[in-house]
Length: 174
Image 1 (tube, rainbow, N blue to C red):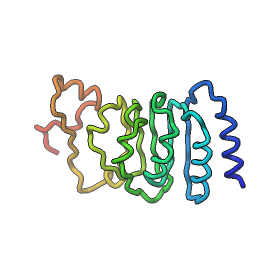
Image 2: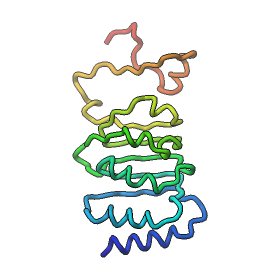
Image 3: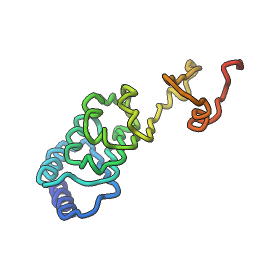
Image 4: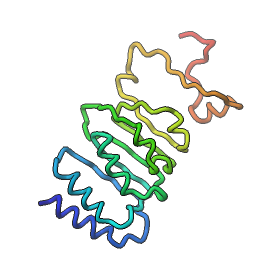
């Protein structure tokens, strides 16, 4: 059984972990026996995995939520979440994910290929956020205006530095 062999090797590699992993990439495909076997492997560890960067290619929030308790929240700096379904963009429920210590402690977020609804207050602790828009939004014939709102900005030039010069000033017409 290749899954059992993988889990055994994975456990051996991490058994005497002294340094943080630079990154840990986990890709979960639709192999029904993988998650139970892999979670048993993680449960057998005494300490959570210390990694600076977690990349999880998943199908749903339950898969990510089952992995997060085994990742050291004090060490994680970046979370990348990607969908393994290339032609389907499912909805990723974020309510429990944003409450995890791993989410709260991370500095950077990269989220792709999911539809999500995340309150901005759950993103403001990140120093860097990368969220991809779907192609339909970018090539939409009906989307003519996209606006970001800030409650308070003392210097409008900060926005130019962050987002670049505006493509069109509100005084100009097309």
